[in-house]
Structures are given as C-alpha cells and as structure tokens.
Amino acid sequence: MLSQNSRNVLPLVGALFTLYIVWGSTYFVIRLGVESWPPLMMAGIRFLTAGILLFSFLALRGHALPTPKQWLAAGTIGILLLAVGNGLVTVAEHQHVPSGIAAVMVATVPLFTLCFSLLWGMRNTRLEWAGIALGLVGIVLLNTGNNLVGNPTGALLILLASASWAFGSVLGSRISLPVGPMAGAAEMLVAGAVLLVASRLSGEHLGQMPGAGGFFALGYLIIFGSMLAISAYMFLLKNVRPAVATSYAYVNPVVAVLLGIGFAGESLAPREWMALVIIVAAVVLVTLGKYLFARPAGVRSVECEKR
Image 1 (cartoon, rainbow, N blue to C red):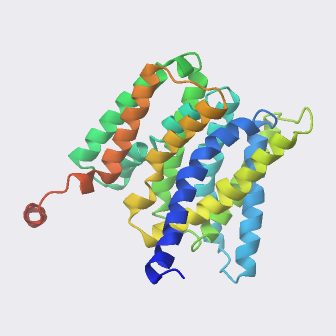
Image 2: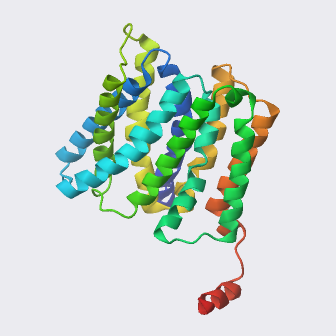
Image 3: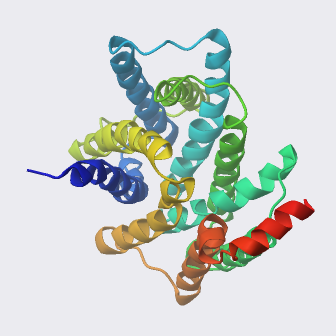
C-alpha cells in the first residue's frame, strides 16, 4: 500500500508530468493536425468540443454556472489566450514555422507578462528586467536563424500570440472569472465559437475529409491538450508555489524541439540552439530568480522597512 506522503505526492507529479509532456507535445501535434485541417477550423473545433465536454461534466457535478458578468470576463480571456494566443500559433505552424521554433518563441510569454504588469503599476525588479533583456537577445537570435529569416509573417504571428497570451494572463488575474475549472470551460466555449466564425469569414474549407492522423491529432488536442492539461494546471495553482506551476514555460520548448527533431525531421541551426538556451535561461531567471538568488532574511527585512 502507498503511504500517505506518496498518495499526496503522486497527483502533483502526475500534474507536472502532464504540463511538461502534454503541453510540450501539443506543438508537434498541431503541426500534424494542420497538414489535413485548416488551422482556424481545427483550433475552433478543438476548443469548442473541449469546452462543451468540460462544461457539461462540471454542470452535472453541480458546479456553479457562470453569471453574465463572469461569461463576459471569461469570453474576453478566452479570446486573448485561446482564440488569438493559440489560434495564431496554429496558423503560424500551418505556414511552415517548425513546431520546435514555435514553442521556443511562445516561451517568451513570462517576459511579456512582466512588461504588461507595468500597466497595473506592478514594478519589476532588476533581476526581472535582466531576464527581459536576456529574452530579447534570444528573440533576436531566433528571428535571424534559418527557420524564421524567410518567414517573417510566421514569426510575427507567434510574437503577437505570445503577447496576447501574456496580456490575457495579467488581465485574467484582475477580473472576476468563473470559479475553478469552470473558468477554463467557459473560456474554451467562447474561444472555440470565435475561431470557427473567423474560419468561416476567412474562407477556410475542407478540401477533403482528414485521415486518421488528422482526427488523432484533433482528438489528442481536445482531450489531452485542452481538458486534461488545463485541469492539471488549475490543480497545481491550488497546491504548489506559482513558480513550480509555471515551470512548464521552460520545459515545453525542450520537449517540443526534441519531438520535432525526432519525429518531424525538423532541425535547428547553431544560432537557434543558442537562442533556445538564452530564452529558457531568461524564463528561469524571471520565474525562479528570486529563489535561486535569494538574499539573507536580514537584508530583506531592512529593505521592507525602507519601503
């Protein structure tokens, strides 16, 4: 039989594994999916289906339904994070941006988040500014590498996606959202509907019915990439430090790059490998820097008194 400590630790390990591997693998799976699905259509079906399933499950379990005000808030965040954030990444991969490169660029989200926090009067520390500066160096290196130098549109789309996700994350912590996983369900419902409307307006259509690989990719994104991963993230936010819960930001790019190289024939130039290391280091600096470079308690106490 498992000890009490083991029973407490196993869910945490499982949730972290889900975020590290599943969210890291979604970039590769998106690449597989857009080979047979129009990008906005696939993203719309993904989030609308996941939203319907999760919303129905929660409603049957007795979770409180969102109020009109909460629907408006969840819809706003869903559009910023999922419709624009994830939707543009899907479009970029459809335009032949390698999945590993897309994941490395999306890893800059914590850096954008620090910048948008300034709009609400949150001051960044010198350590965080150093991380932002280091991340900018990584972005410049990445955008002058072999995979993006000939695809400026794809690079711009992913930068816009990252900025939208970051702004939505900052805004989401300051408005009244539905309680618990119901927030994710409502966000996916609205985002899915918006993406399908955008797909229709942009003239997307299925030239032919996707094969087994296309449906496998869509199913994986619905069940694992949306429902399971979002639930795991919500669980971690309630049970571990935020620095641990958001550690996926510097693990996902590594997972995505390895999957892209191993199974999709992608490759990174030396400059792009350097950019990967720099961006991951920058994200580690802004998320874990205060723990890695913690100063003695006496110094912190003096600073608090001065403030």
